[in-house]
Length: 234
Length: 336
Image (tube, rainbow over all chains, first blue to last red):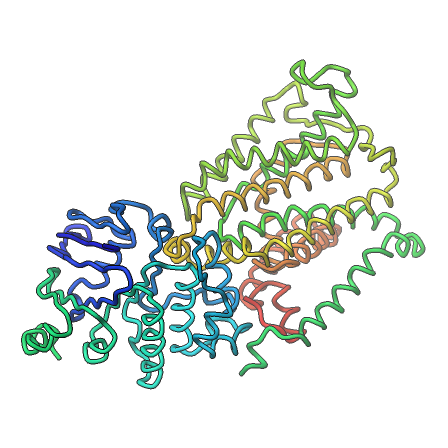
C-alpha cells in the first residue's frame, strides 16, 4: 500500500470537519476522492500533507506513519501536491518556478526535467521566460502540475485541478493525466466531475460530511450509480 | 503579449550598457575628481561603496527572502569592532584573551571579521528564524540592541567613546592610507560582493529564497526545508554586513557603538527601500541617494530629515520598486 488513510478525524479549532475518512492508493493506481463542496476533501488533503494536524486516525505513506510530520518532510517522502487554486510563485518565471522546485528533491530513475515537463505541456515551453502571473488560468494549472512533477513524486495529488477552467483546457489537462497514468504514475484526484474521472481512475472514494460513505471500482460505480449520484448531487 | 512579458534581450542590453557606463564612471572617479579639484569626493564615494555592501546584504534577506530584519547593524558593527579590537591589541602588544595577537593586516582582519559575523549570524539566525512576522522584527532588533549595550559597557574597548584606529590596515604590504588606493580596494571588494550576489540570487538557492518570500508554505509543501534556506541566507547577509563594517572602520579609522545602534539598521533599511527592495542594484542606488541627500541637505539645515522623510514617502507611494523600479521602467523593463 502506498498511501493509506484510516479513520481520519480532524477539526479547525472547535468545529470538527472530518469524522471518519478511509482511503488508500496502491502503486501505479489512480484513485479519485469525490464529494460536494464543504464535505472535507481539501481538509483530507491538508491532513495528508501535514498542513493540518489530525485529531485521530492514521495516515501512512510508503510504510511510514506521517501524522504530525512537517509538510516538507512528508513531501520529501514522495508526495507531489497540486494545490487548490494553483498557488504558483507569481513573480518567478515559468522556468524559475520549475527549477526552484527541483531543489533537494529525491533522485529517482527517469527523473523529471524541465524539458520533460515542457514536452508534456508544450505551452509552458513557449512561455518559459514569462512571469507565472502573466499566464492564463489553464497554463498556471499546467505549471502547478509541472512543478509538482519536478519533485519526482511517487504519488501525485491534484486538488480540484480543473476548477474554473474552460472545457477545452480541462480536456487538455485530463489528457495529460491519462498520459501520466499510462507511464505508471500513481495519482489521487480530488474533484466533483465524476463523468470524466470514470475514464481516468481505477477506483473511487466518495465522502459526505467528513465521512467515507462509498468506495469502489468503476464496475461498482455502475451498479451504485444512483446512490453515488445522490451524494454528489449531480 | 509575449514582448512585454518576456524579460527579453533588448532590455537586458540597455541595462548592460548602463551598467558598463556606471562601472567606467566608478573607475575614473578618483582621477576625475582630483582633476576637477573636488578631491574629497573620492573619500565620499568610498563611504558610499562600503555602505552599499551592507545595504545589499540586508537586501538579500529583506528583499529576496522576505525576512524583515531590524537588527542588521549588529553584524555591521561587530565587523567594525573586529578590526578595531585587533588593531588595539596590535598596538598594545597584548594577546586577545591571551590567545591571539592583534594585527593590522587586512588580509587577516577582513576574513576574521567575516568569520565572526558569520558565526554570530548563525547563532542569532538559528534563534530568530524560529519566529516570523512582527516577532521576527522585534527579536532581531532586541538582539542588535543587546550587542549595542554590550559594547557600550565594554570599557576595555572604549565603551561609549569607541575605539580609534590610528592607521588603516595594510593589505599584503600595500599601504591603503592613500584615499585613492583605499577607494579602489573598497570598490574591488564591493564589485566582488555584487558579483557574488548576482550569481546567488539567480541560482537555485536564490530562486528558492524568492519562492519562500512569495509563500513559505508553498515551498514547504513542495518539500523544501525553508528554515535551512533562510538561515543560510541570514548567515551570508551577516557576513556581507561584517565585510562592510570592517571596511568602514578602516575608512573612518574609528569604530563606536553607534555602528551597532538601531538607527544604523533603520538607515540600511531606508537605503534598500529607497533603491528598490529585492533588486540587485537597488541597495547601491539607495546608498548613493541617501548618503548624497544627507550630505547635501545637511549643508543647508541640521534638520535635513524633515526633507528626507517626505521624499521617502513619495518614493514609496509613487515609484513602485523604488528608484531602481523607476530606472527599469525608463529602460523599458518590468520590475517585481
